[in-house]
Length: 406
Image (cartoon, rainbow, N blue to C red; front, side, top):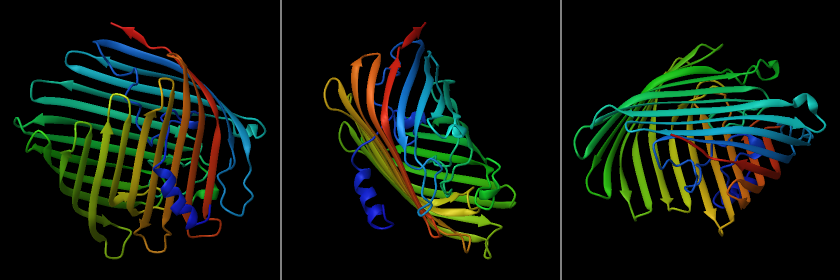
């Protein structure tokens, strides 16, 4: 895939198709689960879904190397035990998900590793007007290809991400709601001197405030404000990012909802000569949900912290996900993300990143599925060997059995 032609082709492919089940058992963050998932609670108590995925996939760039470096390929077999759980009570709801994957390479056995992904979300209604909520997402993987990592070049080194949120939601009236959330993020990379100048890691915290006012049954007014203060380790860079905007959300039909929001982003940092930057903040999205299929797409442009090259970047991205049943037994899933990062620090090259995941599956019975899977990643950075392509494709077998605990 060349720099420009490949980029345009990637955008076309991005609208085509996707997967919820992770390729090579690495949990995907590009799409949501299908609407027909049995994890949707229908009664009080716990619904647990233990599952096991066995996959075999060909990886054409195991070391995540750039163009011109003669990338090595290998077959990787994955054993992926996983458990999902949902608790539904009169006032509370809890969801959890843990996935641990053993990656076993056929020839390059020194790369054998164990991936971990975990998430938990809890919400409790205190009274008719007030609810509290909290969530945490954790990932530990052997490469930096996670879509959540903004402004980070693709390399093969250990990456750890923890993203936590907690807050309160209040119904101010029959039409108005207000939520305030505390956010914390921690990112760390393996100690590899080869990438010491590119991967710094760090931590950040902030507050997000969201206001919704319902004008009618179909239309709501939106107002959002987010404050982030982050620290890049080793470089001791401190930066504060503020994003605020107003917009509108509209239910176009019984199954389609769209929203748009525009505002201002402000950056205060110790790494820039003028220390302050301002720019537009834009968010937009559309969803289409039916009992059998699911589609959503979103676009955003704003300032965000970067723990890769260091500093803050102007981030522009498009994401989309799709789940489509073709028949009672056949289905397809797809997820994609397209991102452009323009670092604000002078001399730091921009990044263009693209992810595409897809699967085509056959349901043998309610407990057993077989899938053909594909996962691709592409990145461009203006330096020698700065074009990275990685493709993984293979097959996997998944088995699961829901268990209800009252």
